[in-house]
Every structure is written in C-alpha cells, then in structure tokens.
Amino acid sequence: MPRKKIALIGGGQIGGVLAQLAASRQLGDVVMFDIVEDLPQGKTLDVAEAARVDGFDANVTGTNDYKDINGADLVIITAGLPRKPGMSRDDLLTTNAKIMKSVAENVKQYAPNSIVIIISNPLDAMVTLFKKITGFPANRVLGQAGVLDSSRFSTFIAWELGVSVKDINAMVLGGHGDTMVPIVRYANINGIPVMEQLERKYNDKAKAKEVMKNLVERTKMAGGEVVKLLKTGSAFYSPASSAIAMAESILFDEKRVLPVCAYLNGEFGINGYYVGVPAVLGSNGVEKVIEFELDSEERTLLDNSVSAVKTLVADMERLGF
Ligand code: TXD
Image (cartoon, rainbow, N blue to C red; front, side):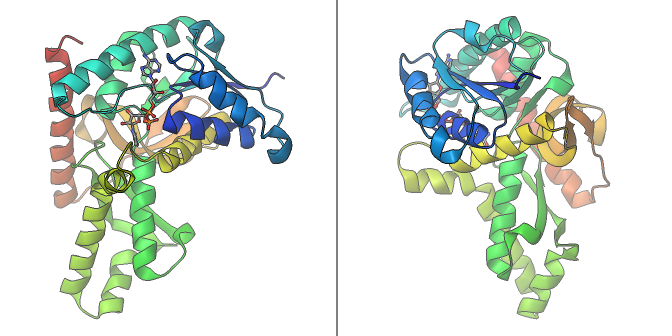
C-alpha cells in the first residue's frame, strides 16, 4: 500500500514545522510548495536530513512547481502574506485572496480528491474562497483555528488551577478573531467543572467569575500576545501542532471531536457560512458537526461571531472575489 501524500502549500514558519511534524510522525510523504525559489527545497532538505536521527522513512521534498503535488491525499495551506505597515485590512484581504485563488485553482487541478486544511488568515474568508473556487464538497474543506484556540484556553486554565493540561477539556467556537467564543460552561477537568474548582479555590463566586473572565480574555488575545513578544511574525509551533492533530484524525480515521472551521448547513441555526464548531474528523474529512444546546449568553456570543464572519465574507465579495 503506498504511503499517503501530504502537500504543504506555503513553506514559511508554519509550513516548516508542519513538514517536521508530519515526517517525524510518519504521516506520509511530504511535498512542500512555495513560490520563493529554493526555500521549500532548503527547508525540506533540512528536515529530511534528520531522518536517521528521528527514525523516519517518509520522503520530504520541496518544489516551486504545482505538478509535484499531483495526487495528494491531504493538503495543508499556509500560503499568504502578513500585514505590512501602511497596509489596510482591505489591502491584506485582496492580497491574500489573490494568493488563495491561485492556490485553489492549482489544488483543484493537481489534487482534485484531496482533503484540505486551511490555516492562512483571514481564516474564515480564505476557507470560504477556497471552497467557492474549487467547488470541493464541504466535508473536504476545513479550517484550523479552534484546536489552537482551545489548546490555549486549556493551557491557561491548567496554569491557573495548577493541574496537568492533559486533564483539561475546554472548547472555543466561533470565528477566528476577537469574537471567538470560549465555552466556559462545559470547561472541565476530567468531567469536574472548572468553574466549581475556581469557586473552591477562591471561596468567592464573584472572584472566580473575574478570574475566568481574564482567562477568556487572554485566550482571545493569545495570538497577539505572541506577536508582540516575537516582534516579527506570528505563532507557528502551536498552529502547526493543531493542524497536525486534525490531519492525524483524518489520515487515521480517528473520528476525534475537534473544534474546526466547518461549513454549516443549518447546524446551530447557521446556513451557508464557515464557523468554528465541534466536528467529527475521519477519513471523509468533516464527517459530522456535533450540535449541542447553547445557553442565551453563548447564543449571543456565537451570533456576534457569525456576524463578524459575514462581514468579512461580504468585504471579500465587495473586493471582487
Ligand atoms: O490558527 C491559525 N489559523 C493561524 C493562522 C495562526 C497563526 C498564523 N496564521 C496565519 O497562517 C498567518 O496569518 C498566515 O496567513 C499563515 C502562515 O503563517 P506563517 O507564519 O507560516 O507565515 P510565513 O512565514 O509568512 O509563510 C507564508 C509563506 C511564505 O513562505 C510565502 O513565500 C508563501 O507563504 N507564499 C506562497 N506560497 C504559495 N503560493 C503563493 N502564491 C504564495 N504567496 C506567498
């Protein structure tokens, strides 16, 4: 049985970590595409030369020619440009939409049966555009945001309570941006409600609420917190790890329930938009969106987040995409 073929479109910061993780975990043969000459060849040569030490057999190669992604089973897209000084939000949207358009046309041509995970920002718009251009079915096009946002939320909860993050389950839904919706009510430590533990820790309900509010705020701002410290570029280790968790669930048909940016057909009362929701990921991609009852506060927050996604998509359409 041939190995799975994984195409990475974009060989920047996240692309590099994706290549290393995919190879070292033996997810399949990796082909990295970038428009910058020699960059993907250099990065993948570096990763490949660790094969003896890390003990993997997968082939890891770089290319500037889309032909080399031919027949890929899984495609992970990080191509795009960061916002430069003086660039407006619309300028960035136009630039990255142009890039995504060319990526989508080539993926459609060379990997027409692939499942595609998109990471490029602005995420909700890029996923929408990719689906529109390729016409791929909704189950084969999804975006990464919620796994990372949820991991960040879980990490902050674990630090606050002094327990292992491995025992924290917490989910962030909605769009990828300031309007994301951390679901506090269901955050738990192996089933034990996090809020109850905060109340016990502080022996004060109001204080516990305030502490949780700060954890939620830090989660929403977590991307910016890293950007501020790095000075150049944005987070890349954790976004890559998050996409790899999604890739593993798809490649190994794990059927994990992960918060992902998925196309909604009436689920949660939302129709025709990509929104972060819990979904079962298996060999068919997004196999099922898991719905659950939202309370009125969560509903309001999710509606607010969906409005932001709608505005973003409308802006992109206004710009001609
Ligand atoms: O959780 C999330 N979804 C995110 C998303 C978390 C962090 C960062 N997020 C976004 O991912 C970020 O705002 C960017 O839009 C992407 C990729 O981030 P990365 O840090 O890897 O960006 P780089 O290092 O700038 O890499 C982008 C690469 C770079 O090598 C360019 O040469 C390449 O994209 N690029 C292209 N590749 C292919 N085809 C075209 N047209 C192209 N244009 C640029």
